[in-house]
Length: 378
Ligand code: ZN
Image 1: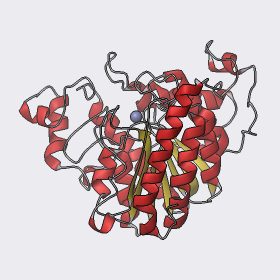
Image 2: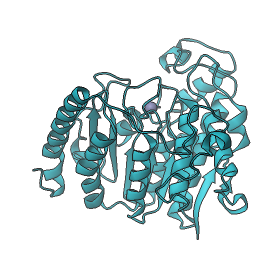
Image 3: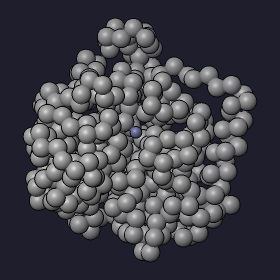
Image 4: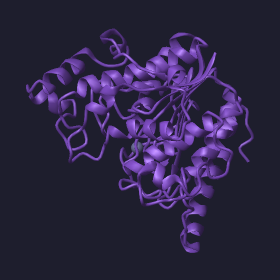
C-alpha cells in the first residue's frame, strides 16, 4: 500500500475565480510546485489525477434543481433561481469553469475517500478540496459543491465511522448541517467565533440534535488566538473526543486562513501548530483524507500545505526543513526561514484576554459534550 497521494489536476490550475475574488485556485498548484522543488514527491507513485464527481454522486447531497441552476447560471442564464441559490455575489461569483471546478474538486475528495477506505493508500491530500460552506441547494463562501460532506457521506454509506475535523478558520456550517442529526459522522470544528466571522454559526451550544446529539462539536475561538491557546483547545476538546469516538476514517480540512497574516480572519497561528497537530493525528494510524480549504494569503497557504506534506511524508524532522533556502526555493522574498512560519508575537494583555476566553469555551464545550461520551468534563 502506498503511504500518501497528492491529488491534483492541471484543470485546477487553469480555472480561476474572478480576479476581484480572494479565493485563488492557484494555491494547490503552488503547493505541488514547492514539494516538487524540495524533492518531497515521487510523482510516478504519489501524484494522482481525479475525475469530476458524477451527477449521481452530487445528487446524493445536492438538489437536482440547484445543480441545474449552477449550470444555467454559468451559461449566462441568470435569473431569480440564481439569486435563491446564492449565486452572483462577491463570495460566490458566477464564472467560466465554476461547475467543472466544483465537480472536479468533489471528485478529487471522493477519490481520496474511496482510496483510503479500500486500503489502496494510507492517506490522500486534495488541496483543491474543503468547500465546507456549500449547502444542499445554495452556494456560500466561495463554495458551490460540498466535497467534504460528499466524502463523509460516501464513507458512512460504507458503514464507516467518520470523523470530520475542520481546522479552517471558518465554521463548517454546510457539513454540520448535513450530519447534524447523525452519529455515524462526527463533525468537530475549531474556528474563529461566529460572533466575529462568517458564517456566523458554530457556537458552543450547537452540539447536534436527536441521534446526533453530542456528535457536532464546535470550539469557537476569539480573534487573537495564538498557537498556545489553539493547541490547548485542540488537546483539551478535540483529542479526547477523537479517542473515544474511535473513527474508522478521518477527513481533515486544513484551511490556512487561521495563519497570522490571513487577510480575511483574525486568528494568529503559525503553520508550526498545524504541523504539530498533523504529527499528533498520524499517531492514530487511521486512514485519512486531507483537504485544503480557505487561506487567502496565497504564499503562506501553499507553504503551510507543503509543510504538512513534509510531515505526512516523514521528510520534516521538526527542525527547519530547508533553513535559509526557503526564500530562494519558494521564489518569495518575504520569509527566508524555510517552510516554517516565524513565531508570532502576542502582547501580554491580548494573550491574557484570549486565554481567559479560550479556557471558558473549553470548559463549556466539555460540560455540554463530554458526558455524552462517557468522558469526565472537569
Ligand atoms: Zn475558511
